[in-house]
Length: 503
Image 1: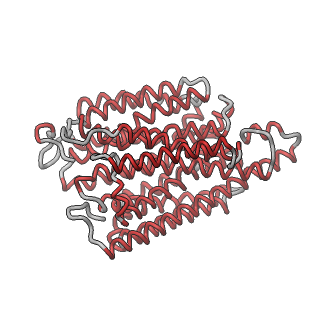
Image 2: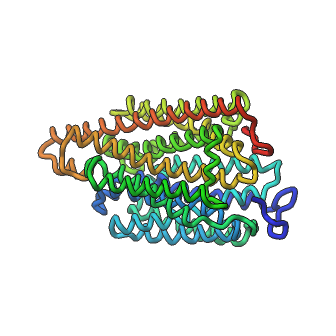
Image 3: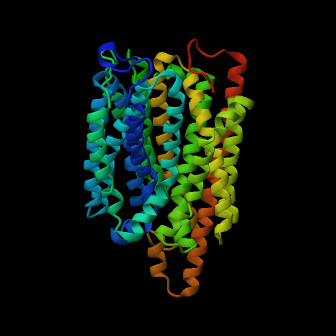
């Protein structure tokens, strides 16, 4: 969607303050992305301070990602119609208010609700930042700008545990949310002062019913996965939740097929190239989101590191991503071997890294370090290639929708990964040590002697290993499936006329 001439004050050479605006956008984007993972390192503190169970912790994480993913497409449509600058400012304001509420929360329920509110602001920010970048940069410098924007995405995903560890080493857990407030305020001032307004008044109306149906559907399915180990997979509680989720998701699909301007055009799923890229995005987000959720617990509960030490020990993942992305290795690989093979290589590296953590990092940090470096390389090689595959699989006039789909399904994969791999961990832990406790610290506190505490710790480590291996299999399957579908699509059909190039 293009902006009207009167409301797009850019010139053929780009906005004169475009690089300064890009810096503002990247800071806002980084803050939102950090909150996808920063909570992972605070899990022990929340368990102790708020008496949160494993299911509570999972909902603290999922409330943010599920609300955000359910609203991404609607937020993107609203920004196109009503103004990207307005929606970017509104997103910063809502994110700051939600962060204040989260930092002052007194119990698990309040924190979950605040995280959901932050998800609303995050959805507005996620969908407007890239749109603004496209508006203010000319064709020559836009590729470099989007590359920096993509690097910030990867950095935000991987650096959350490190930032959280630094904060928790000096302050209480609420500080990881309150630190967002000055960033949001400064970002809001900078957006109002610097960012030009751009919009498409003829854009599609927001699909509010579609957003509602998809959010309820995903929430129901994920809740069933989270509560399955505690209530039993065949219990009425779990089956009812799963049924509600599936019914709403089916209603969402039917609604999207019946309206003139759907939030998600289901006809995209007839395109093998699009399906392959989407499948890879979901499964890599599934494996990465769930594995980071498990990794921070492994570093603190099993290996005995403090929050800051655990955060520092996840930094090699972020460093690998930044070094390889900024050096352009991923783009060079796509040019040399093609998109399908780049995705296969990157996703295989992701899976190998997860397997290394599971099999070699059980009792020392060495195997974990190797796995983090290999995972970072896999992310740098696969994620840009998958994003390019999605954008090149659809017509250019639907580029905004394609970006929204990529973000929505990636967020959904992240939340589902936390739920599924957390459920695998809980099931394995309960099978090995049948203790009546909602978390590992509670189980250790209830142990009668050192021998029992040792058995409980070993059982938890075994559950983590099993969960990490499940994540590795999911990532490898996603990479191979995406590569096969993309290779087949490239052989059987040309790219749509005018579509974005694959590399």
